[in-house]
Amino acid sequence: MHAYRTHTCAELNKSHAGQEVRLAGWVHRVRDHGGILFIDLRDHYGITQVLADPDSPAFADVEKVRAEWCIRVDGVVKERDPELVNPKIPTGEIEVFIRALEVLGPSEELPLPVFGEPEYPEETRLTYRFLDLRRETLHHNMMLRANVIRSLRNRMWDAGFNEFQTPIITASSPEGARDFLVPSRLHRGKFYALPQAPQQFKQIIMVSGFDRYFQIAPCFRDEDPRADRSPTDFYQLDVEMSFVTQDDIFDTMQPIIQGVFEEFGGGRKVDAVWPRIAYRDAMLWYGSDKPDLRNPIKMQDVSEHFRGSGFGIFARLLEQEGTEVRAIPAQGGGSRAFCDRMNAFAQKEGLPGMGYIFWREGESGPEGAGPIAKNIGPERTEAIRRQLGLGAGDAAFFLGGRPKTFEAVAAKARNVIGEELGLTDKDRFAFAWIVDFPMFEADPDTGEIDFSHNPFSMPQGGLEALESK
Image (cartoon, rainbow, N blue to C red; front, top):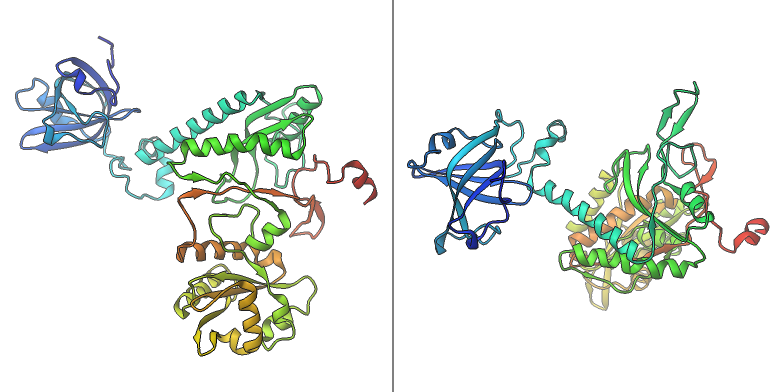
């Protein structure tokens, strides 16, 4: 018999009944039912219930066992009675009667329980990361990540790509964020940079004559934490292709990405049509260059309805160059309570507030209500309603200023409205290609013009446009 196990904790079923087996793993939990001790034994693969009654020669050893002890058990597989079968786990048809138990690693009282996954402060979770990663949710996430990467690799190889690794210690290059620097031992006072992306190396590969490259590439960026990205490094699927157009890239990559989401999306539908949206339109309609298109809300510029109007805040603001007022339509949001909640949301996000109009049924059709409607009058209110395609029971929320100052909040507000009003369809995935990104942008701190992303791209119109426009 193997020194540690003959089977994993997810392998046994009723076909193994009567066999002597050896299992090893961690004690997920211990239960005492009328003097019979039950242990849920866990390993990487799953859980098997093992037990000992007072007649078992291992009973005294089992009594000493505590949560997260690492143990090895020898025993006999028994089929469970039909009423005791647990359909939630693969081994739910059987249990193992313990004949011998060896403690491979005892544990002191746990600072972080594994069973039940209670919420704990992040500092505690990071200090005891080895316990945190034993919890079912995080274990599942780690395996999901590994399986997604495996699937991506297989699909890329099947599409004719070759995987190459690029250097980690390199020179600094502009990528839109700050570099992490590594001091040089040989060249005092000089520094290497960790790559924000393998951009220059992969383009060297392409001009060297290799046709299709990919890499699951680490990217190191000294930037503030984001909800969808680690504050120090993240991994991305990096791709280069030779002698292709933009359409070729889209046609090659869509089946790969769509296939991964169909494989790991839990049965949710993936939209087959991926619209192409210009960056300028994405920021206008959604306030973001990665919009959630499951939410049907599209923001619109309604500046003309407020220019010279009785709503002084927006009227005066629009006298300044580069300012505008945008509306976020909210179908079904036409109650004062909901509008007040969204106003409070904007204040939490650091804005003075978020104006609104809500419409209710009047004698001759929908009538606007709220402070803004009162100040701009019925004609302008009706014009806004018609532009946004709203009716009685709906609302619209307004943000004004230079777009860069409110777009991020507008994007969040759009998402919150879609969630709260049940407009966002969470049973599907909706992708888009965002195109026509700007090459340059003004630095928010210095006002100087800088690259908005890596500069190793050909402007639209090619070299002629770069030299003449």
